[in-house]
Amino acid sequence: MPQHFVAPPQWEWYIVWYFFLGGIAGGAYALGAILRLMGDQRDAPVSRLAFLLTLPVLAICPILLTLDLGRPLRFWHMLIDSRTFGLNFKYWSPMSVGAWVLIIFSLFAFVSFLEALGSLRGSRAPFLSGGLGRVFMIIGAFFGLFLAGYTGVLLSVSNQPVWSDTWALGGLFLASGLSVAAAALTLMTRLGRHDASAEAKLSRADRYFTILELVLLVVFFLSLGAVGSQFLQPRWMALWVVVLVGTLVPLALHLSTERRMPAMLAAVLTLVGGLALRIVVVFGAQM
Amino acid sequence: MARTVGFFTDTTLCIGCKACEVACKEWNQLPGHAPAFGDGYDNTGQLDEQNWRHVQFHERTTAKGGVAWNMMSDVCKHCAMASCMEVCPTNAIIRTEFDTVYIQPSVCNGCRDCIAACPYHVIGFDEASGLARKCTFCYDRLQANLMPACAKACPTESIKFGDLDTMRQVAGARLNQLRGQGMSEARLYGDKEYGGLHALFLLTDKPEVYGLPNTENAVLPSRNNVRSYLGSLVTAALGIVGAVFAFRERGGKE
Image (tube, each protein chain N blue to C red):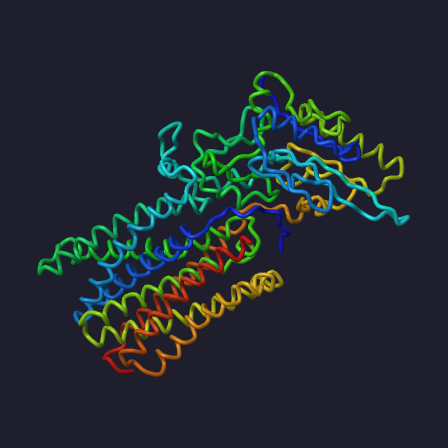
């Protein structure tokens, strides 16, 4: 492990919430697209719900990022070179890539949102139902998954202890993003009146995502080696407990029953655990 | 006239007077932080947005059981391969005509990615201006053909300034001189790290003692790009397979 002498960048609550909401938005779009692409008409309401959820959650993300800047009015410097007014893009800088992905994914989320809104009112925009529509959703899902995962890569592409000592953060945030998105959709379907089969599918999917997240948590600590023990200081233990409760308890509930209250409890715990994971990773490495 | 410049800081000549810190603050109009008095003479603490020079004081026990100080005036290294410049998403961090690394105040938007990248704990975030700030190598003075304020003020010439090639030669000659006098622990830092630094140091202890990563640990943030993205890609593939598998199953019950 490289020995680091690095100052903390003071990325705090705006960034934590961006990572969390970006995970929900990206994951929700991907799940909505997969449900739609698989073509079961009974799943259409949940798929529509996913697209309706994505855009409002995504809309908060650039606001959080802009507020976090020291000079918020210069947010556009991320995209455009303020000297030459040419485009700014550095593929080797995840922050630069992420700014572009956020813009491009917003376009996909916006179109799918409008289509879902139209579908809710009984009409269907033809451009998303044919082959072109399928390609559109596949590309949109790619950018959604990218948004959910690149945030971990952003942390790793630094010299900050812990963050840069592992390659697993991107995958961990992506798995967690899918999991919290499935949980958010489960909550919304339970609160509404949707087909029980679609709810069961979401529950099963979340079970797989949670297992994936747990595996990546283990990989995360294994990749950190001795640095990982420093990351487990007593002041962070309570949050790690929340992370574990937010993964293990929902997993047990998914496996045991699909009754109404346990499924909602599982979804709430998953969301809280996903937030706690980002809090402990972001703050834990900076203090 | 544009040229490739460098510092050579000879720690064996540093007397810890902090004239470099004062001159830097005076010239660059840095108000500084309130001094923090602890168990030692170092009341500056660290390099950051207000401290562009920092005189470190390291106490060590000598072979005869006495106490000796290792002092070093630390500064931005203006790396040839600069981690801060690599990650900066706005291109606010540029290489000047003097081959130094400079944060353009008119371009920086205060994202602070450079702070997480700098392996020397150099850059700080200035709350007042909302910008990332660090040593400019006295860019304005260089443009006026003047030497940086810190080197100008140093009374023992511990901080030397000149063309980088000349500084390398001076550093090499000094190292040979000290080793010839029996100082076997003397070593040069900065000729190999990050493609060669524009601030060379003559040290009398391991680099880590002075908060400098050794050659093996002097690595760029981009080393993690491919493996981190690959980890995400594999996870995405597994997630999609999981979702397809879950969504294929029929009915509300298992």
